[in-house]
Image (cartoon, rainbow, N blue to C red; front, side, top):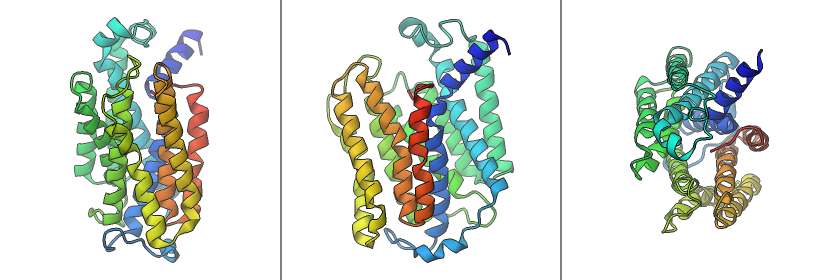
Length: 310
């Protein structure tokens, strides 16, 4: 492979924010587990952990889930640069397109190939709900198209994670299209978490923070939900995960308060912490799988050293 090809490959991996892929994978696992284990349970009620035997893992199905969801995520971040090309030519000339590493038509082409491929794989091979999948794809495109000009686009970014959860929750012919109350509670918590992150990240380029503190409050909602479940259910085994999540969020807040480039560092940490939030949600139901999800955090941190998370 020539040096030019290697440079282009690295640029596409950078555009694809591959360091955030572990958060996509743990989101998929959390959604899949919580929807199956939470069927027919009332709101805020946790299933008996002994029911884990009812989960039927099929490696082939999970290969398609991981591949399809990864392609959709990478497509969204790749097309983000395609939509933002004029802005980047004025303010971010070091981005792959303005710097000349990639041509605009290449980014558009690769991005849409990834988007169509990911959606096709999830629908045909992972057997997900077509309705939720369409909502996911439309929300990805809507965010990319309007995020520079509309402050409310932070809700669309949160919606991308919400509809990813709903889409993967329905994967497989062994589950109904109905979403469990447990799944809905956690998916809306991750939506609010992402809204908080995105609201702060909007000031990364200028080195400024939101004028009001509500985005920081949103970051702690998932922690409070986790703490509630630990106390309400008495499943103290995941408390260490909950405290780790709280410390990570707090540390990120202290980081971004320094402003400047520190905002990006804090945002990157919060993104990696998505995996710990997922580990808590899964651990409350299936502790062993919660430990598996926890591995996503160090993996994300390692990938961030080579590929920027924002």
